[in-house]
Length: 406
Image 1 (tube, rainbow, N blue to C red):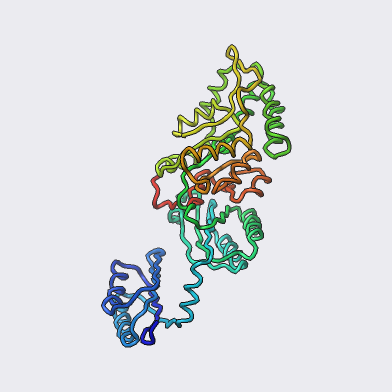
Image 2 (cartoon, helix red, strand yellow):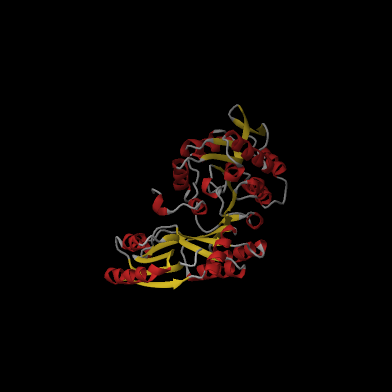
């Protein structure tokens, strides 16, 4: 930079109105100023605008004088701060630092949540560049409020201890009944294209095999095996065979009755509608049964269903299955396969599930989410949602309510 150049940071605050930015930047344009950085936010019709510009030292006084005059006419406050060349050079050097996104999702947004997340970020010597609200504006009437709130932090820097940071977020989330996502802000985060769901206790609020077992009169035995498998205490394939055997003799007509009354998880309808609209490919990878997966496929327009097939003879379940068991390892293989078929980079994939058998696919996906999961799964997964419905995934993907149709 030449000795005749000057760097000035201009800050404008006040009631927003059409034309403020246009009028003030026009003053800079008339004086051939170069804009090095600019940022603007509007919170409840209150404007905050920052402009870092470079100009000839001989005309900087004229620019500030004209800007002060016009800001008075516009009813906004304006401040000027000279920036040293060394400060600017240091700022430019920070641009290569890592960037992360921290997303808060919950039933409501509180000052404790914001303060807690901000404290953890600061303890890691990281800086918050931007904060934006993803959910709609909140009415004062609590009865009129949407039952969810989300805010996204854009953070710069390198964590001193990433694992400790994640542990702190997990502890804070449990204390304040909120979900906190911590993701690297890469191009892949903005370009997710494939999402794979577990079915039972994820897309639907039940375990279908438990429903079948209750009709067969073996509900308690099957439920105990299911819960043990989901906690990772016994091998999934072994538990699956044991549970299927207990269903022997059940009339196949029971399956249709259960399918027609499946309890769909909160937020699933909205999530599916938006994912289809923005071009996602959607798959069910389930340790449950194909019959129910195909029912959901028709309901939501899902692209792929891989689950287990129950053997039926003379209209009754035999207690055996047909074909390869879809266990945790198979789910991960299928995610890779579908990504390859759809020509999607693995970093562009999302996997969502609640059980230990979902961890293999959750761990290899670009974004793996434990949804209302068992403690072991929640502690292992990079991200988790426990406080709201499935449409909370939209906020982890960076979508904003104002851009979406309900």
